[in-house]
Length: 504
Ligand SMILES: *[C@@H]1O[C@H](CO)[C@@H](O)[C@H](O)[C@H]1NC(C)=O
Ligand SMILES: *[C@@H]1O[C@H](CO)[C@@H](O)[C@H](O)[C@H]1NC(C)=O
Image (cartoon, rainbow, N blue to C red; front, side, top):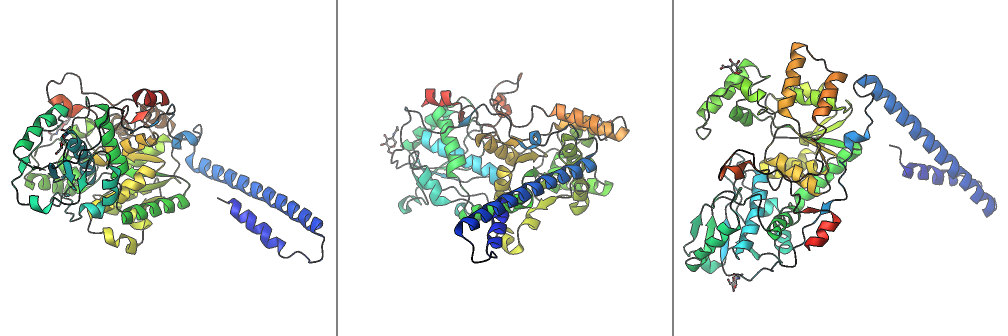
């Protein structure tokens, strides 16, 4: 884009060459007319550039997006003036200076730990305890030795939640050796469960929590507890300064390369494909490799998986090629800038090329940042994932090729920040269309495009209340089928003006 700065420079540098002996009046007039002229030139330039752009894209897109205006592809869905609301209600009680302590070992990847830690903040509040800064998982397949303060801004975390709970960096020295109540909290528990557990304080000063993921129910919790979870996740759990600063830098770099970009969470890692048994589009050798990996990984219990059935059921991630077809069918032009947030793509560049042939403007962390900048992140999977997280939350459009903790967290955060556009592929529906492409029943172009757009009209991240449990499932199993609180914190942490008023 030509910007105003350059036209301003043009004016002032020309002015320097004016003959000396003119009256101030004439000079002013001269400058004004020069200025007007340069504005005219500027407008002329930008207009012809835009036209050129349009021509170029029309030329290469042919029929596909002729009727597709640009903005709906990028604009956030209409959000009815909804906004974040995390202030406690008037009934909320401030933190006590509790001498009871909770220590936590967080488990899972980055986003599982982030949401788990936010839940533990709420649990500490319910149980009237002081929270000790959680230990991060060093044993999961992430194999990351990062500590809490490597990944998060520890001081900010403690300060932001000062009015909610007390947080200490370490357990007081005199308590290090006292016996702790070691607990595996029950998954998806409500407030009652944790209130009951306070009886442990009669015998113990310290409770150690072995796992932090999904220990708190998604629904039917007091409004103040839900809002505390949002304060913890969206405000207190900021990434550490080096991560935040590089993340911001990379987002700026993307914005200079193209005005806007899609962040594509391309889940196509070897272990994930092996675990889900999805071998569609792979070579026989690759399928065999994945099958062997599944059979030899002890903690994966399901060994026999029918890949075709998995795919038809919508349980497989889209392949890079399918993502390409999908995004073109939605109307994104080939020039679209796409940032790929991902671990290692199975099949490497060969497989990525199937996407790049449709979208050559693909950027990875490794091509966006310098080696020097990435050095500190190389052996720290969770810190590298934090960069992807920042870039994904800040993107104009977020597209996850598969579901998972990262996809859910980013989607929820984007909803919270103003329902930024998140396009969630209807994998089950898409597979039917892709199969028709293969048999020749359908061709890439306007008719595929029509079906794909229709299928995704209501999958763009527009405001809606969190989904409850699946029908027909009884007992505690229902809790597991509810939409995650962190995938959609509406209604508790997202309000219309009226609602906020009523509630505070
Ligand atoms: C919280 O704990 C402190 C001391 O540990 C106690 O004085 C206070 O009464 C407790 N508050 C509630 C609401 O249980
Ligand atoms: C897998 O499932 C498909 C569809 O149900 C079926 O046609 C195919 O025979 C199955 N393959 C094997 C190896 O069982």
